[in-house]
Picture 1 (tube, rainbow, N blue to C red):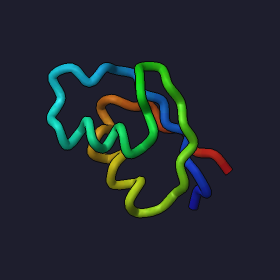
Picture 2: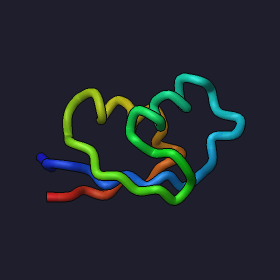
Picture 3: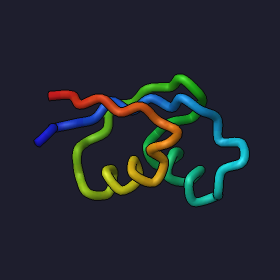
Length: 61
């Protein structure tokens, strides 16, 4: 299993539901093309799954 994920926000949040905006904010992403490294845990996996159409995820070891 991966230790962490590198998450990049590819699309803007205009037209998204509030819960999706909250998930992106909790992941630490503030603007388009921003990248963060998040830990691999069930909470972060759920947030990534909720906004998978907006982000690009790569696995970090």
